[in-house]
Image (cartoon, rainbow, N blue to C red; front, side):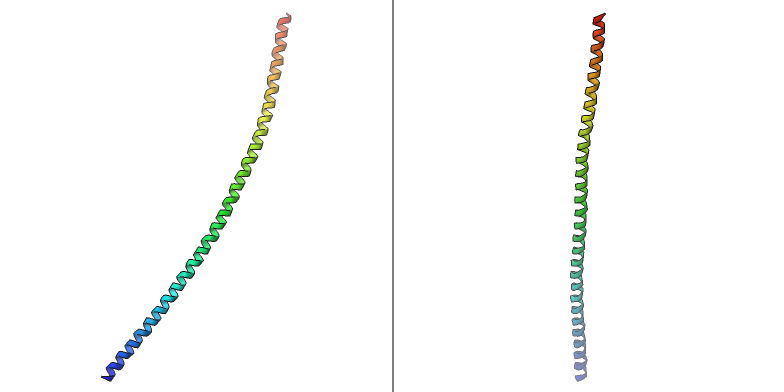
Length: 105
């Protein structure tokens, strides 16, 4: 009977040992999961920050291009307005000269 009890106690002790090892492994797995989650969150934050910086840079670049476009557009409009006014003035003078010729005949 002592032999059975001794065998039973050994198996109980072995199961307790396995249970303790299992708990320790679970705790290690949980610690690894938490460490991985932190690492992943840091990675995501870092790349989000880089993306936001790139996006801000792109938007600023687009704004600068739009401003440059507006400046150049206004300069072209002014240049063509001046040329158009000169053409209109020249056409007016030619018409007046023709009208004067016709009137002088």
